[in-house]
Image 1 (cartoon, chains in turn orange, purple):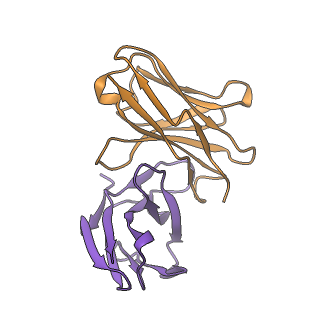
Image 2 (spheres, helix red, strand yellow; image 1 turned 90 degrees about the horizontal axis):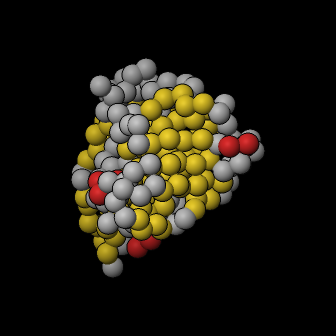
Image 3 (cartoon, each protein chain N blue to C red; image 1 turned 90 degrees about the vertical axis):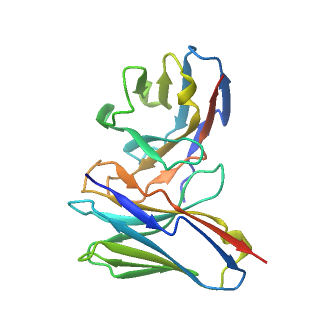
Length: 113
Length: 113
């Protein structure tokens, strides 16, 4: 099973600060996703990314969020001005195609104080 | 609205016993159904992935069934072990391509000695 690496594993930030979460790509995986899981709740879809473009996003993914994959390097999720309710586990997932196995990273635990 | 419902919400069983977890979905058009195991604070790990034409699929002590007509799936765990304690999440993909996965809330399984 391909390894999916996310960094950092845990980040604490003050409300209003910007955070960047990173996901290390695998060359033959074309589809990238970000999901979040608030403590005790189910996993929620944020955004999918294909061919260096956002292909779909949820209502959660508002103007405070952005994703990019600069120069084919890390796949990043940026939260511009964090709020307390952004505290959650953020998972990166990748697939070779839209219907094959989705492999999840270990997640980044974001704590906004 | 695409939804995935799981039952029971939580379950406690003795080590060595069998159990069955249920999943109902209203996702359409259906592409595939996945069962994931998620340990606390970790990313989901895939157990099985089933397409429309598959009725059952096994992965070691895990056996998943799918009835696409009634839109129901089950995950059967035989001879449970303490390490099976985790959340088991049913996830449905709506269609081919990069459509995001629709997650259930999961069943929290606790296996006790």
